[in-house]
Image 1: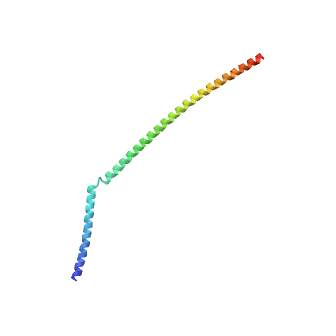
Image 2: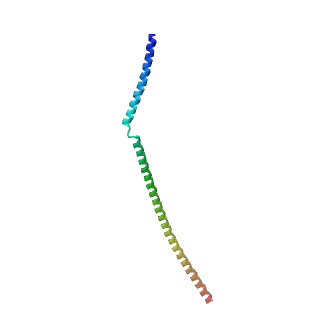
Length: 117
């Protein structure tokens, strides 16, 4: 019987030691976490919010810059198109004037030919 009682006490002691070790280990881990944590949860939330606002502002600036470049390029294309259109219009007018001169000369030559015959 003495062996059975000693065995039960030994088992109770080992269970107690395991529970005590788990409790002490958990407390040590919690203390280490609190001491070694880079910052508090509130600080982390504030940092995330601040970075979110910075990213939003950066994105807004990038979108504004892109829109400005698109507008600038559109204006350049538009001005280039207008210049080209004016050049083509001028060339067209010159060709029309030149053809009218040829037609006028041909009409004058036809008149002279009719008058001479």
